[in-house]
Amino acid sequence: MTDALESQLERAIREYDEDGATVLRGVLPLALVQALGDAVDAMMDAGEHGNDDRSGGGRFFRDLYSTLTQPAFAEFMREAGLAEIAGRIMRSDEVRFFYDQLLVKEPGTSARTPWHQDLPYWPFRGEQVLSTWVPMDAATPENGVVTYVKGSHRWDKFFPSQPFSEGPGSPPAHEWSPDSPYDRPDGPGRTLTDVRDHPENYEFLTWCVEPGDVLVHHPLVVHGAPGNEAAGKRRRALALRWLGDDPTWDDSRPNFLRMICKREGLPFPQFEQGARIHFSDPFFPLMWSRAA
Ligand SMILES: O=C(O)CCC(=O)C(=O)O
Image 1 (cartoon, rainbow, N blue to C red):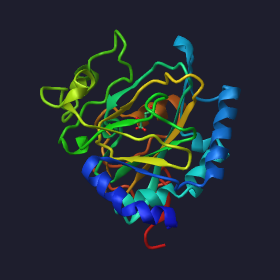
Image 2: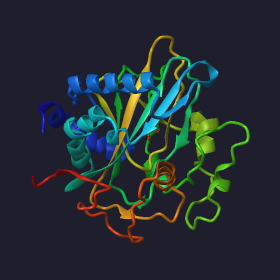
Image 3: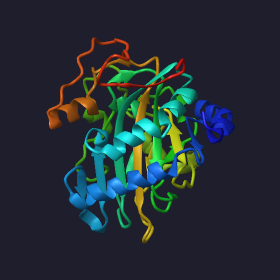
């Protein structure tokens, strides 16, 4: 463990447990973050990968599983120390890599990332599924840093997954997965709609971050991100997701992995419902072990 991580770990674990999100400062090797940013720029210049939305004046560039196609992403995933960070904060004995998600909001991108929880989009149940959000540029509320609703991972809510659009014509959340046995409609009480419409009722966590820092969040914490309204300030970020010891397979709900596998022609993992994810599964490679 690096000194930078060791000195922040106790605080980070406490905040992650109590608030659902935390920040670690200066824990990532800057050369690797720089190389990642260069690879992102090359991808965006080549325009070969990703979902490239240039409507409305900005540019919202997204990609999934870039670690499979871009050596700099794969090196970052293996070498930057994030698997250990995930394992220490989740207090897991082992950590497997789940997937990576690139989200670039260039200046002038108005698209918000709507309030959501992550777990409803994933074919798992469990507590130990942790996200790390790595900025390649300084990120602030003005250019779209992620914001968390403090403590919302303990609301005992499981908001249905929904299409990532708040625009006219997108179905209300409860119409997205009406047959799912345990997706609860966005009913009264603390709801995603209420977070959006009545922010005064909630406490938010927002950190200004620099390259080398990392944001860490729990799979059930409610979070979202503004668009990038800051002139001349890019917001390139890579989210990397990690699996600890307790997740079990549950693809009874619509989930992003099924959608991606279909779209990319990738094999969809064939696990029994309720099965524990074993480290020998090639889909989720073992990246860190406390015993090693
Ligand atoms: O970067 C963003 O705009 C959103 C990121 C996010 O929702 C996540 O990493 O789970």
